[in-house]
Structures are given as C-alpha cells and as structure tokens.
Image 1 (tube, rainbow, N blue to C red):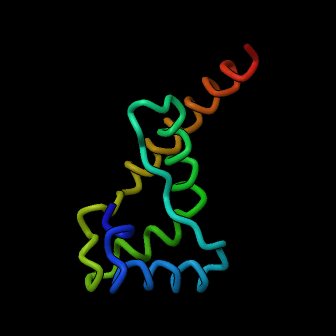
Image 2: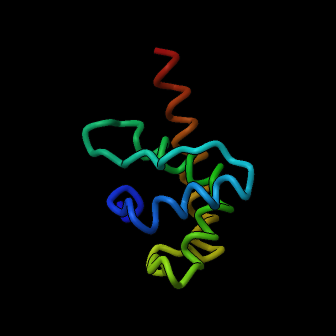
Length: 94
C-alpha cells in the first residue's frame, strides 16, 4: 500500500490527518486472499476512516488521486461491507 511504504511523506501526513479529524492512529488492514474476512475488515476500516481517506486522496502532493473513490464507489463499498457483515454473522454462529 502507498502509505505503508512511504515513511518519509505519506505516512507522517496520514497520522497528521488522523489527528486533525480525531481518529485513532491505525493503518488500513490488507485484503488477503487466504483470510476470508480480510475484505470485510478492510471495508469496515475504510468506512470508519472515510474522511481521512478522502483528505489523503484529494491532496495532490500525496500522489494518491488514483485511489480516490467517487460517491458511487463509496456507496458500493458500503453495500459490500454490509453484505459481508451478514456473512460474518452467519459464520460466527456455526
């Protein structure tokens, strides 16, 4: 991920943004093919940290514009997260 691999510019800025929007310092979980719930974890994080993610991707100096999500893409991510949450609940009941 662009933030984890950038200790000189993006990572310090990420922590500044988190502080400015009163979010605890965390990194986005990675989507791992061998972990069935990692997509849910990543989307849940993105939903909770949406404001900070939008600030980071909108900042031209960060060169992260390619990761910026449209309103429609955010809506799709939210819907997918909700669907995966239902799957998570079924899995935990077993």
